[in-house]
Image: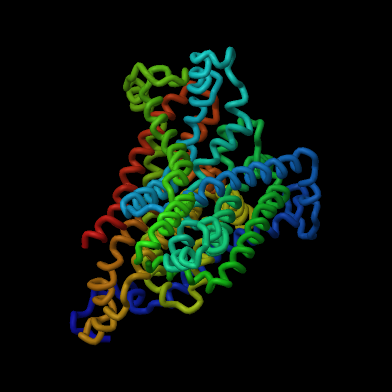
Length: 305
Length: 278
């Protein structure tokens, strides 16, 4: 190592080591990362097979917690969560697919594209609770929508299903979970070579054929990724159903919370495990698709563009 | 092209018109949803300045709620705690993201490593919060507090910070470092004078992203906060109890959103605008 620029102060020796050695620090970081990220998740799964007797954890593995999940009330929460998450994910996909394709290949303006991508990124960094609570003032019985409809004479008394209902939860979920559907489809569509589309056109393919046989297969990994990134986090939605469901549309996230408050750790972790298993299964499907296209490292190629 | 082929070309043009996904019509629903994302923010601001926010109709604008917010000082301590934790988390994810991000594009097995690092993006907040709560509290028997809030936020913020650094690092030409080494620069000089300036926009954005994600974090904080109250936790508790404080929460949320928006603009400016000018 050259010393031509003078020896840095001893305090910088450590930093200097980090600056020189590239891969060593990454592996030590990954060990720490596993300790605060992967081990707790695995622990959660382990917890779901244990029981608490008195205040002590008993280490005889059993599936009582899972049988408990099938009890009437809890099972209906699971079904409701799956139904709402699937419905909203389907709505997001229907809206995001044409939008993402247009954004990637339709618009000619780079400014429009950059601006739209920025508008889709900003919400990740804003508080969901702060953005959701105001829906109450819009949808409530005295809210804006009801007042407007009554003023127009369309209804005589306020609609009570607008707020604290499944309708409100659906509506509240659509906005916050939209960007996670658009981004993967956009990234997949941007990587399509324009020459392919031109070739399909030159060979006489009608645009609907180009869409179905060229574009859709090529963006399929993006579509699957979008579904995974939207559906899985939505299975754990807690803030939005709590604020807009008003107890009428409790989802799994809310149940996990009430179970934890009741110190029922095994059932809470069984419920969380169900969501985790759904996540791992969907990620596995995604990985199979990605492998066909060169593995997860391909993301780096995408970033380089 | 011969004249005879003109009609055909016309026909082709018209056919291309039914490429619906190319037309702005297919973009409309998307912009409606973007409106659905931003309308509540604007509405929140309007309601926070309305004299009767619970009536649902904006109007009769007043600063009275903000005045009352500044008389009621219960939210000040949570605010400082949030700023402190967000600053520590932002700094930590900035440093770690730089360290990992500069090496990752050149590593073997970078795919699995990247996957392990961005996994928390898919794990819902409740699940991660529950997992960390049980791990720290029940398995290790530790007392939750500032440190667990910080760790919980770090696990959430780091993937975003890393992606910000990776945007720059994957474009960085490492041959520049070899050239510097040939010219006699040591490891530290190579990093500080060449690599760091090239990655700087990503590093700044990583810090700001980490700060913002920690500052606004709620789902995980509910579980790992112990008895400590951050600003989102305070607003959440106030909003959940059906108190007359809701208008104050509107005002408080508006201020937090505006501050966040300003910081995001800074991050985007560092990451994209400045780079294009350079």
